[in-house]
Image (tube, rainbow, N blue to C red; front, side, top):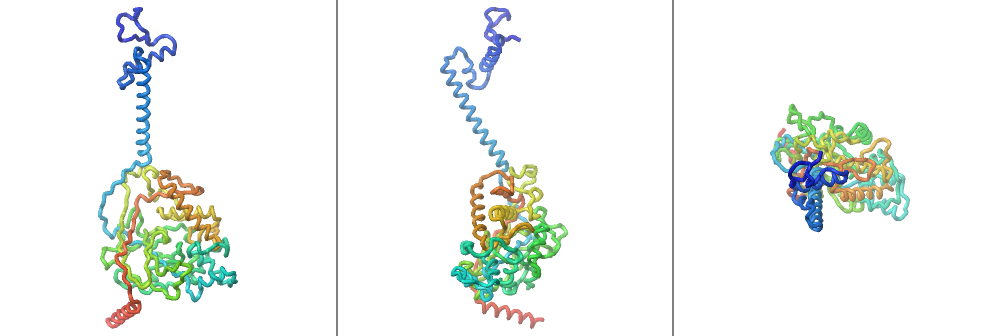
Length: 473
């Protein structure tokens, strides 16, 4: 087909007509471009295609058009990148939730005293090792365990074994640590005195042997890990075997009553509180292992989440009473985002992320599992408190420095990837991007006041209460 310039008129056989689409292929393509530029409504294109316009003008307009396209492409690319990486606009639509729909937090309590000083004097053994004085097999057995709960820099790694038996370590900790009866004097739940042993379980943490209230070990440990932990704590109350009537995404069962598990409260008054009287022997105030810090560490976390005592805790010194106000906050993700992939909405639903050792996904559980994999890869073993299976070697006292280095390395990697948008988890890699859960509960602990108490007067007061109760009966 042959087209002619619109400025020419007459029949297509006139010799004055300028043929636009005829001749060689190059001439046809050139003619098409010239026609497009002349007829285009895009500003600047007409000036590029005008043959009679000076070449310098056409070059300037060509440069201006190219620069405009590059600028637009850059701006569009930024918008697309933001749309791809941050497709969700975070807004807070605050909604009041009845307190009985939120489980009471799991309360984990750890004593700073890691051994009875009359049974195992860590400071004395430390200086004996430093002075190359021989120690007994029992002292070395306990040293292997207790040194892993002390300041990492205190243990040089020059003494002890690289690998250890997990059951032996835990048995040693249980042997020398303050007992449950030494730690808990009295407990009260909802202003009713209760047996502390029925409400608190033993738990293994990065701080050593601790005690948990309202914990769900059987619900969030996978079978292999749960069985290993049960074997480690044979003879000790390790779990509450009550039927579970709650999960993070669906909340409490509609048929669950007031006395359900995990425990919940019906109000925010003192009537619905947990009161614990903690004790320890003054002679156990050892200065070398814990850097002279005495008292207790208390951490609050979501039921079904592994406690990270060294990361988030409230410190309660001796001879003081503290009132900890709990401010729970539920963060939920709109159902409209469920169809988005996790890396775009930046959170996981429970069914979207598999963890090797935990049945319940949480960012804390994922971080711990990732740290376990990194430790195993770099040290050839895992810390006694980390999740593991039968094939994982457990680190001994000589590996403490390596364990400390892995934690530091992990924190550096998190800092480097703080703006990373990739959520691909490769357990063989150096870094795991653990996203938050799409539905999570955050318990903010506020210590309202701490006052010094007279232990003797307090003890007499409790005994007077018991006497009055006995007389009333």
